Image 1 (tube, rainbow, N blue to C red):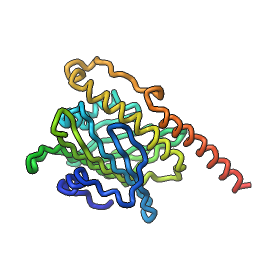
Image 2 (cartoon, one colour; image 1 turned 60 degrees about the horizontal axis):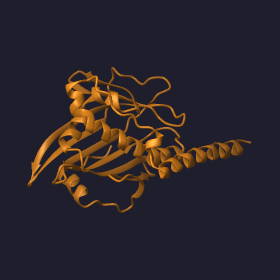
Image 3 (cartoon, rainbow, N blue to C red; image 1 turned 120 degrees about the horizontal axis):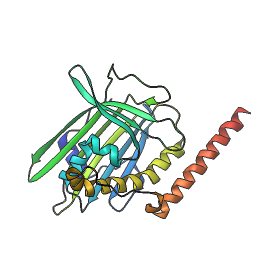
Image 4 (spheres, one colour; image 1 turned 120 degrees about the vertical axis):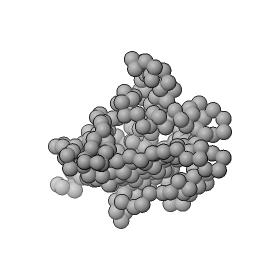
Length: 248
């Protein structure tokens, strides 16, 4: 795994994005996701830039770190819990994959903190996949061994936040491109709405953990995203047909 970006490098990425060699994969009014694949080491890389005008960075930061709450609002997350291996502490994470793909799971460590740099206050969080010998891989679930994320948040100068999220992963296995197309073009808009709803509801949930969060369905996603999802499914079927023809 490559070294992580420094806080200063993340600030520069937030203020002046470097998108040379990156392609726009998905967008919502508040979120832009760019991606690329490094053929040499098969790493999938994503950069996500957000401006959310009605959520403070403090609330977003707390939501991102709250595992108990994540299990309630994140419909992609099947299982999550804190784990330890001697003095090393981390998190076990299992994600439900779309389109009949095997679930992925992770064991990772976390690092997070707050920084005052210049006249701005930043919130930082990092995750990195690491081996925990007492949490072995499970049958029919693909264990991701190479993965790293970094998130940096700050105020937008008003009542909202702006952020940058940098992510890389070796997904392991032969995942059709159509699945990644579905995840980027349909999953991102859905996930953005889930995250936004979770942030808005978080202060009430902290006071009363029986608070119900609004659900997000396909009907809440714009028509362009739905078309992209259908196209991805058709591409997946075509990919399967091509494989069958090659075997005949």
